[in-house]
Length: 123
Image (cartoon, rainbow, N blue to C red; front, side):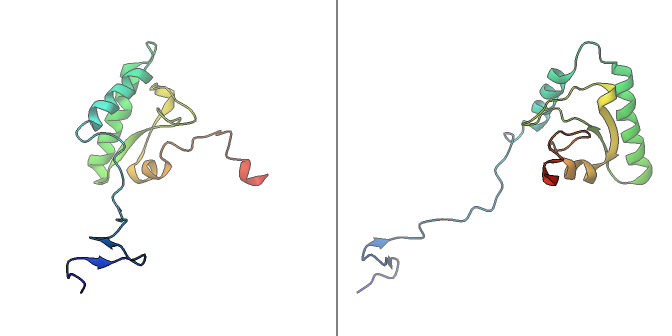
């Protein structure tokens, strides 16, 4: 007689549940509670001494202004990503722009203007 809490395996053995569980939760890229700390450390490492902090602050002020004016979130984007598997850009005024958060999220750290690998699909 088969015990109600156990299931019969096809090979004749017993097991108490499924062999594999489906984990649909995406693993965290950064440890919980460390997102701001990691972001600030990346920004500090990517900022050279010659960066003009006043001009950089203008971009962040413009993003806050557009967010307040339109009611939608605008963020400061690094044109060449700060941290990527392929390239690491600088946190300087000529590498920043203000864009809508959705455009920034879709872009991610994978594409930038003049990207050398963007023409590979045409070959």
